[in-house]
Length: 91
Image (cartoon, rainbow, N blue to C red; front, side, top):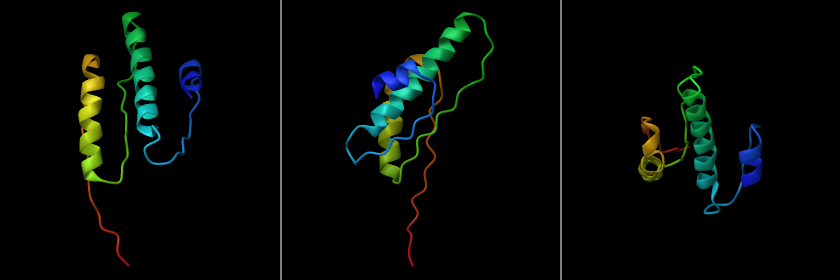
């Protein structure tokens, strides 16, 4: 999947079992966009400010991913904000 992300600008839909690396693929996609924007900024091309949304079903998972994103993207001067709600679905 790495060549498809790096060599194309197409959207992707990734479905895979738990623990197979979907989050790492999301990080790679986000990193690619941030690098493209940084390169445009160096060329003095005005570009939008990016937003990256990561959705997960549990608050604990969002907290873990937010911490990892903060570490991975620390050199990009972006804000990483978590928005969480744990809702119980009952009949």
